[in-house]
Length: 386
Image (tube, rainbow, N blue to C red):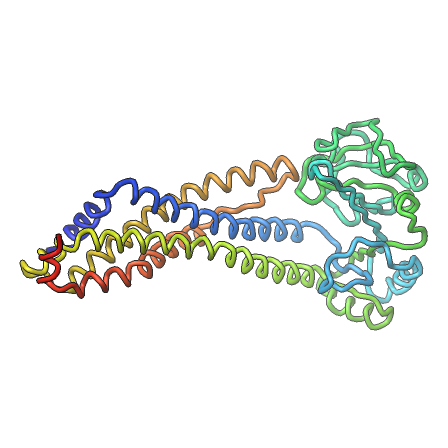
């Protein structure tokens, strides 16, 4: 008997109980799809950060909080540090020193959340985000330093329903007029609201303090040496783009491990369902296996038949999981595009192969015990089974 006959017999064995087979395959489909959708979130976010960090500054970012403790938004860096950095700038080859203060406005509805980004009105926005350009109105100018005005990212303007001349509520006492709206550029810039540094400091009650200082270097290859010098001389934390990329990479790997661990529970449940279905099939077809043995089938053939049924069942579930995964990615990206203008989930060949590979491994492991039981059946007792 050749391989095609083996697969044919396995398929007939599964289709004898179509409803049970269908429900088991659906369980595997959901388990595989949920796992791969979770992992595709990490792939998508990794791609977003890679593209964002590759197109924007700063070369060096100075703060009081190390990356290992998270990306702090609290304005705790004294303004005197900014002046000290400006004095060091000629020696270190720093072209621009841009103090930044950030604040988050959030709510239960994430579409109504925003990130306020305070920078020097005279060129601070383009120093950090050189690709940012205004599509409506104008950018911040030096005359705006003490004026309550704002330039809004495209996605933030859409989510908050803001346009030229709109009033942006900063808190109960402070408001700003929208004087510009940026052209759609990227997920990061599109979600920011730019304000003059002094205005946001006053709004946050953080006069004389900033969150970070962004440094643009004449030669970005000197970033590591410049960061080390600043850390040693000023007793602050200075991180380069590569430091931030490494931090994001570590965070995403940890996140991937957590998501995989959660998905593993669903995979184990799916594997137990496969094992139960195949084991029930072995029990119900005891006489059939006894007949096969009686007409000359070896124990290895019976074992292979049961394993093939298990693999086939898992393969059907895996293919269904890939199809459901495509639907899940589409739904996730539809939501995140509307929310922040980014694709948070990514479709990659590696994840497709992972989904199919895990399905087959699941089928193999789930079928080992039923296959062993079927191959060790006694011919006499099997034929005598009612």
